[in-house]
Amino acid sequence: MSALAAGLDGFLLGGGLIIAIGAQNAFVLRQGLKRQFVFIVCLICALSDALLITAGVAGLGTLVRQSQTALTLVTAGGAIFLFVYGIRAFMRALRPETLEAEGRAGTLSAAVGASLAFTFLNPHVYLDTVLLLGSLSGRYAGGLRLAYGVGATLASFAWFFALGYGARLLAPLFAKPRAWQVLDVAIGVVMWWIAGRLAASLMS
Image (cartoon, rainbow, N blue to C red):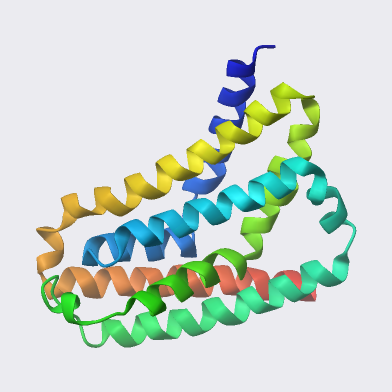
């Protein structure tokens, strides 16, 4: 197998995992629609994924899989974080805003903090990047394994920047308060759905 083929495998698998609807994607979409700190948010999410993918490909996936305590703590923390963020989304839906009005809200530190929280408090990120991508990288050796990891990392960068900047195409629609209201309700539902699944996994 060539390095290009291994890299393509990593790109396709990484892309398939990242594109799945989730709290992190919902946050990046909202930042893109608000046009607030889009570059830094996309960069933090992509670099965080790259760090976790590297850790997984380097072999950390096997170690994390053996620690039930670590997985339990990450799952509980993620469920709490997503539940609280869901509440905030529903509260925003009660006060729908326009795209222009959104420009007054939000700070860089808040955007950075939320980007990091959505990444590192989301257990699915660890399962997808560190465990799944990491374990599957074991099919490759040497340079092929490196190419696989690079391909998965490129998929992350491509997706987050496409999502963040592509959201601007929807700007005319989100000039209407009702559209923001629908988006926030949808985000809240997604947050609580994921949080519920995480909580259920702790009790199973």
